Image 1 (cartoon, rainbow, N blue to C red):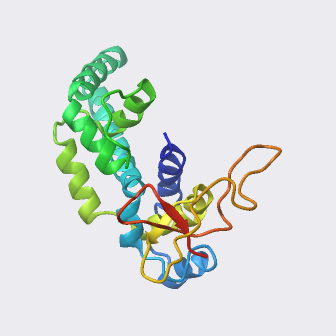
Image 2 (image 1 turned 90 degrees about the vertical axis):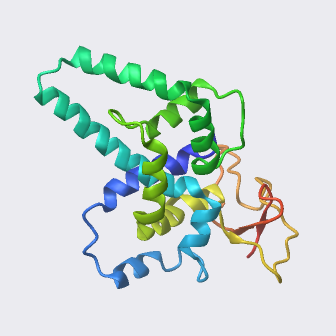
Length: 216
């Protein structure tokens, strides 16, 4: 799954920058200078890469689930009983193919498929809210009203550039001649075989979203 590195890294970033909301906007902008393009737009980047914002929703769900577990423990439920309850709720969540596909396509930005792997299910399970059945509504509301725009910018600067994420849609005047590829100069490390697209910025073709073009 191509989304996993940035998705989980964004969750880490959400913990790193939690409690930093009092920092001045000028400090945030200074941190991003040279790390994002001058025409970077959070809303446009988020529309192209919905999994980045979804990582924040997942972090919120993780926190909710932790509080759910704590509340059951305080009520005297055993660890075994709590584990069994979670396993039962996971089974119900995993059996709802319609909801799984919605999260998979809309929020993890993956193509629709009838054959989710065990790893895919594990990633999707992070949307499951224990003790509730309103996961779809919760995530939709979170994405619409509670996203931290600074964290999204930080995610692109810290991980999105390395992964070669498109930061905007292609527009008139863009050459749209060079596709993102590991054959681009300096991208593939011959020794470690690691890939790093930091030397390039990319736009996404609106008519063919699979095509990402170099814009610098």
